[in-house]
Image (cartoon, rainbow, N blue to C red):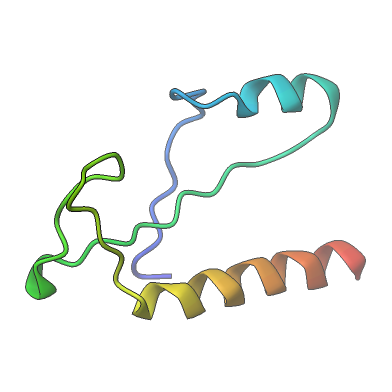
Length: 71
């Protein structure tokens, strides 16, 4: 919770907005950079890397979302 940022709605540069015209949905952006580890390059860079510690956070987030959805 201390690292969650709720951002205003946006379509960004994603095609996701078209999906939500047909069905309800939400987009989650899971940050994967880490300045202290030197993981600082953007997604579309040849030097892009991911802080693998973030992967478990994503798994937990989506697992909880599915659990709540299914009740």
